[in-house]
Length: 144
Image 1 (tube, rainbow, N blue to C red):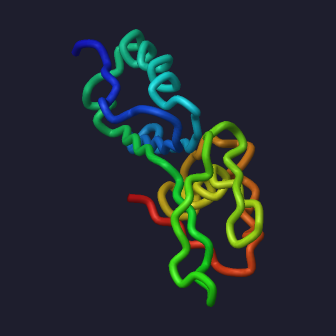
Image 2: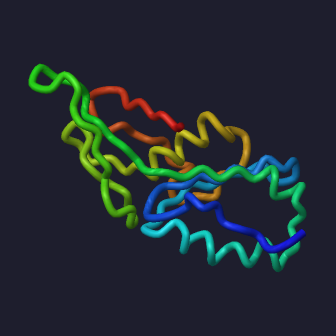
Image 3: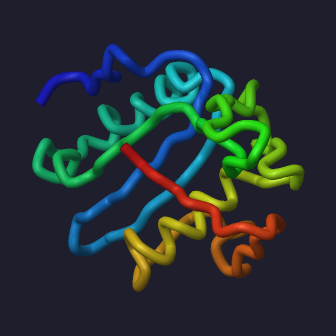
């Protein structure tokens, strides 16, 4: 089986999503970290030490990246520049259309609504409370 390895591209701060599609689990998690490599390196020992099989690990997806935001176009700026909220320390909050938005909480609710709606999302503090959009315009979330 060998020792579990982190992907080469897992560097710096960002947001991450884990989705476990194994039939017995089928759950997910969304988190943020100022250092993604450090966040996951401390957990990789558990993968090796607990002896998770390749078949189990192959059904656990990890996505990570940066949050990019852009205000709604207006007369002064048809296409506002994309912005990164910054340092990925909790809470991941910045301004969108003049309102404070918690992006980690927003992605947790998106996961619950669209990706694992009938299963467990481990972010207990965010998952069971409906997300209330603080802006006056719909928020579009894209994951790529």
